[in-house]
Length: 168
Image (cartoon, rainbow, N blue to C red; front, side):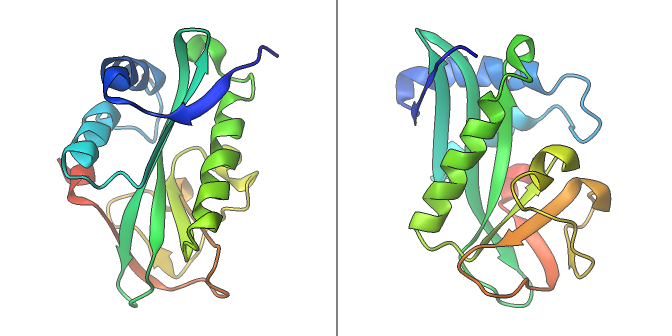
């Protein structure tokens, strides 16, 4: 596997993130093809808790974002992981896995209560996220919605609300 560096995004990286994210979600059954707009709206609203890039040389090969969510039972400091994007020609090389490990490390360091994600269940389950019967994201097929507690000792129940950027 080629080596790459993971770093925080800078303003100069925004066009490359937009392009990569648009290409990464083409044909994915859990995608509405709005991921690049979501990231930009989160950025504009100052709601990106984390935005990390995987870079090989001068090329962007992956990106991951995290942003706050609310849960109807009052659980606090839970975050959504995603969108996570990998260059379609580089998928399967471990880039997404490295980005996930980095964001989970960062979430633990800030004492996040837990994390939720929408996407490929096979991918997210490798990192401990799971389907939770009593935790729902309205409008999303349950097979693609997963969660895991981090600092919280128990899994919350209730309805999850993502930032309004995900609704645009």
